[in-house]
Image (cartoon, rainbow, N blue to C red; front, side, top):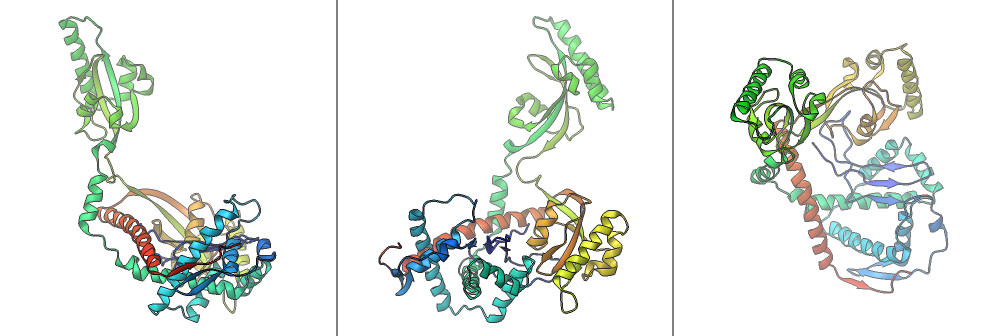
Length: 458
């Protein structure tokens, strides 16, 4: 139920370099290196032809508390936002330039606030974040720098941007996120609001004993008794679908009388009233409508709102190799690819290879990580896991902890416990409040800053 504010930076490079810095999850494949998150994604340059062209003459476009923002900065940020060839179409540059400038103004005011509060990112933390970014993309730091250089980006500028993103996230956590409190009455109110009975769904099957128009009382009574006898047979264990096919006068008899799972507002009110107190599998008292007598069986029932909320759990196992002085990342990838081929060919068993080679605490259990709920693993691991069908092997993948080979064993849906449901609602409300509080705080921070507009960006 954890929902982290994920994806720090996405670098749309020729090799598809992707960067993710996330809050530590509740359960990880190994102990995570904590990387603070940025306030929101920042997209770095694709092929940087626009940046390589001659920039317009530099000049100051705005002052933020007497600190300048230049025309060059605006165009450099705009170049980073340019999609690679074939990317999504964006608004004209004339519209983007003022938007980019406003974003830079807000960021500058925030960074000044971070400095005033003494927030800083030390060199070791920054280096660790850079190493995580490289590892998540299957690169060494040196290879990351080469990739950046090939696309016209400077490694030091990249580190400066990464430092600023981390500062902005720390500032947000201090000024906004850490001040959010969700009380138990708020959770109760949310649950009550989303427990509306109108949201309930039921699936009924019916057996109809039709009453012809203008039937006399004796005929009506005879047909009622027939319906009662059929209902009693159904309650005594007779196959309801077979009874329907044999005796029903309704057009849906070929389907065993099943009417389908739908909201109770889409069923006749007398059907809903007759089956309201039933459990799935039970047969209601006979009811009379204008068409005749109905024998109703409740096949399935989902109560309204969140009480039926379920979570998809995945049982997964993995083999983990940790690159180091004795094992390069490329060598680890090659070894796991070889293991994958043996497993796929049936010449080796996953659990045996995990016991022999995995460098994780799960090795003694054959790599089994147990049943996992969403958010329990780091994103780069979980994204691959979620794409696998039960029994399927992944390609070797790189996470911040090493190189993995993953196999999904099973999936299941389980109801949330009352405690899990309340924690889920707490997270929903916290996220809603956080976004609202952040927007308010950002407006107030900008409002307190001295902003002087100069010559607009060209």
